[in-house]
Image (cartoon, rainbow, N blue to C red; front, top):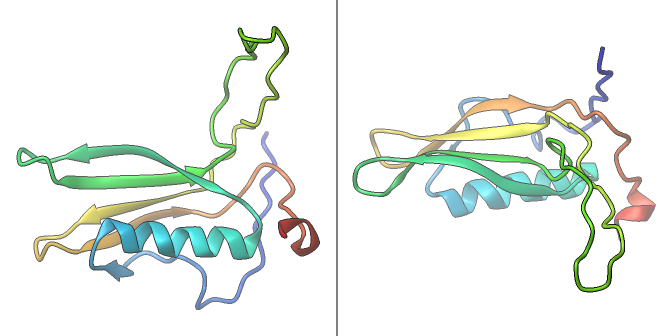
Length: 121
């Protein structure tokens, strides 16, 4: 059983299903600002494009989402620190018929302790 930590945040800052954005840049900007306020970082994840090459879906995940096998830096032969911890925090945006993007999926729980405000700076 994986224990998840739910961050404490003001409701108006928290992502919620149904929020609409004019483009993906605004989607990313919104989630990045939320993540910074809470104490984690994000990265782009999977996306799906339509026939014209325009993204239909776009996901942003916690930078500690998933797992990576340990590896060695080939240039200097030292171990590379693992940062992936299997975190499931993510947000998903879907393109609408009026060419905007709507937040349709949000998972707020983290599997690790978030950065304290003092460590964020």
